[in-house]
Image (tube, rainbow, N blue to C red; front, side, top):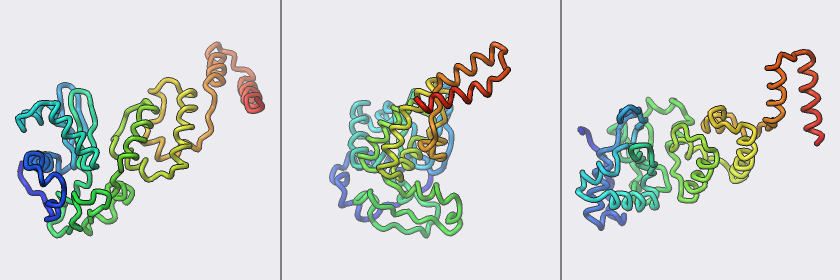
Length: 255
């Protein structure tokens, strides 16, 4: 790969500087991740691999560093605990996202850093150039969010609970981080009812749509009511069905 990355002198204050082997692996990761969004074909599947991400398998990383898969996995766990990366297990491979990647690889040579790439991953140090300031402000805000360990853990609970694992997990995680605690609680409660009303996951909204529409504020319609109405429709008994459906809904509300 051609190009360059930026390193601030304060990298020497980070724990990884004191371990030459791990530091070498970290620099290799910074140089191997994508500098632009793309799609990668593995076998007969296409995988999203966005800016600051890599979908090399654990085995491939191990071969690069001449270590075992378990060593690579443990190293990634260590980085994730320090909020330096986000690791996602995927079919056939592993997707790695470098947190705060914009501080290592900017789109402008004049872009400045605040000197806390590794020393303080909780702050954002990315400053988009003038040509990018007005492009998709919401996405720019998401780029500047570094989730902490509690955010990641709570989002993983949501990800498993919703049980429709579609979309960019990192982007969804950053949307989750922006929500208040009350909104998160309401979401968890709503999803449990929403899943019962839409038991077949292919008919549920994608989680990104759910977030964008603030669907946790929507009323849940009992699927058994809809099924009863649907069954009668398929039998050809159309006369008065709308009136009957309204009556069923009214009775359900009273109950």
